[in-house]
Image (cartoon, rainbow, N blue to C red; front, side, top):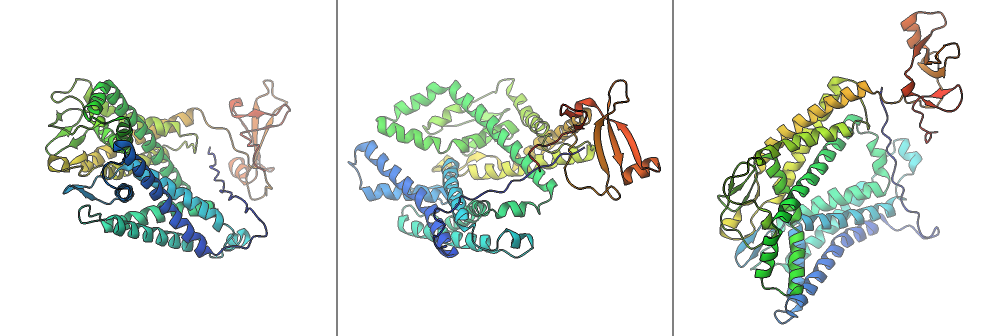
Length: 488
């Protein structure tokens, strides 16, 4: 038995004025790319300016210095390294990058809505006519975004900060073309058409991997917050020793929140077993904790104590495979299967892909955060990747087999799709109550080629009992199994 996954197209907003002349594709894409870069940049510069006034009331420096700090933060969100007093800062603030990515996605979605009326209509698309609206829009959108990135890197950079222009170019292309391009495709309605050509197995694997990764990040966040709350007094002590006023404390806490995703990635590597480093020659894992002096940073209060670990921490590495199995089992209703091999391969492939995605996230979370020992901070990427393959792979495999067993034990409702049926060529399934039976057992009457091959009767009809729990009664003698009232 099987079920169907329905993908609904994104419906763009109607134009404000029906008589308004359609704007050119190039103009709309350029506008979208510039706004996607300019809006987060302006917001960061405004926050930096406000923080400058809150810390010392503008007694030191000039407003242009605060604006430059905001521009450098925008460059750091795009993977650029900067130098502070000669020390290279290469770690990517994932929270800031996520905010910029969200802004780019929203700009791409709005641009796609404005481009939805360009190109061939739906009938031409169904006839196979080539539509270059989205590729052309994404190319112009990306080019505009890259130009803004180059201008910001040149203007905000100096001999002391030395931002990395190649890294800015790479991340501008990744965000504009990847994130913004996806938004354009969805907003224009083309993504729903293209998804129809993607094999269902590929879609299911990707959805399963994203579900495993998402729930695992939730688990890692819970573990990190629990560790931070258990030693929250140390975090407050750090803030008090910094000697900042209320405004400076607010700014410091805001900056700490931007690197919480980095700490979550480190917590994920910790749960997998390899752990992470907080400086050269250090290691934090469920079995070993070897730390040296660490900077005065509030989030570092979540670190465990140096020395022997408690007896229960090694058992934490059992959480990732258990979670992966639970996620796969929980998603079995999306596309249930009774085939053991399909269920096993589906769970295993989702787990392996989730491991690859987590390894990418772990690689982005680390880097240098200061001079000396602080040049090596972040998860152990290679070890975490191999441990994730084993944990998520085994968990996904077990979850796939368990989901298949549950589906075979409790099959899903039969899906009846209304429509014309040629009984000479196709199998026909009619579900009705048998009035002649003493216990009114519902039956399935199969007519057509399948019945003829199976029974060899002249009228090509066979009657098979159907479990009552698979049926949804309509209040009459006729029963339709698993009928979807939304389908026409």
